Length: 489
Image 1 (cartoon, rainbow, N blue to C red):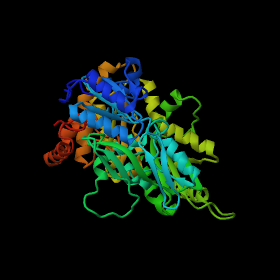
Image 2 (cartoon, rainbow, N blue to C red; image 1 turned 90 degrees about the horizontal axis):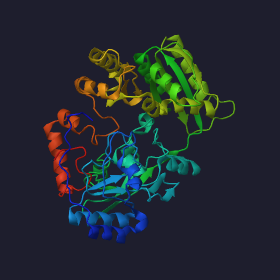
Image 3 (cartoon, rainbow, N blue to C red; image 1 turned 180 degrees about the horizontal axis):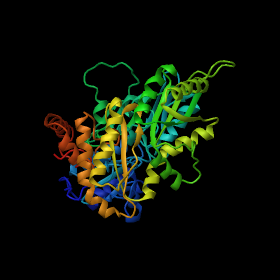
Image 4 (cartoon, helix red, strand yellow; image 1 turned 90 degrees about the vertical axis):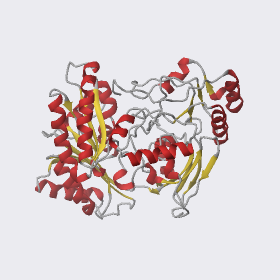
């Protein structure tokens, strides 16, 4: 967060003993956390850099309890910070230091209500851990494609509230594309039941899309109907040494036809980022000791089992990679021969965040541009940042198939976090101005939260900001629902 950041005005109505008794009546003693040690994991963000306060952590057990808690807060003007697994990177689920209201944790609401195998859908509560939902779908020979590094602890309500992205967006879309219906508790405590398993419903405004990506500022998602797909039966995963980012997007462009539209993921990694993971994450093996600055993690998958004697995904990929090597785009490659090798490749990609945290201070930008512009963005962006701080260490990576680059930098060796922070405003402006000039987005998948509230105000048009404020004021007139996130009112 910039040093000049001024927190937005938020309601400061305190939680009185009488209100606390009302909360206890609704959720019981087991649903309240009052001691500072117990509250600490909820009021501190995943990175450990944002620390807020809350009078009490409230952990309802069902939608009815959520509605009653929210109604009580609405009646008394008490601010609410909804939270899922607390794995966000923008502070959207973290209370401000001046927050005097409650933190509403959905973690106890973790039931899978129904799996409709025939209809390819699953109805779940908001506190279900993402990996649990992936495993539940797999146990029914189905596939839920939302996949990200924090899937062992993030919760689906938070995933939907932030419109999470991840490594399968290329094929299946963001979180909002994986949802058929929602149940939401509105800021006045009323419950909107939109739990419809319909692929077609053309009856006016599609309300569910208001709440996905709103980061809890318009209501609390309590249940969702999720889309499922056939389980993958034939998967090929490869780690490629590639010439440069331009070669990477050309490889992806040709992979769609070569795989018969079965490209599941395409992830760009730098040598610097890969080496950082190898330094800090135990047990990870370098799949390809190639002398190149760029790698590509490419995965193809089909729901058709490989028939005896027939050409499967691995054979098709092997031929494709041979063609790409002949074209000079691929310098070397290895196709995983078993699940352990494939998993090792994915651990490298998914471990960049914890590895960078272990490495020390850094700056990271979650941006997107049109896929065809990714190479130019990386080239121009790195040059712009090096002009400001020549000794900074770049390691761009990301979901190159959907244009989402995690444009990341580690502090120069020997530079502490405080010194790096002095360069942050100039670097942020240089990166985000380039994103704007390339008609991109300053937040591809991580959201706005606390961290990017002023950047959103700087780069979005007045009509966009005014429309968002109008929606916020109409749905949450008392500004109690995650106040001060996304927008300054």
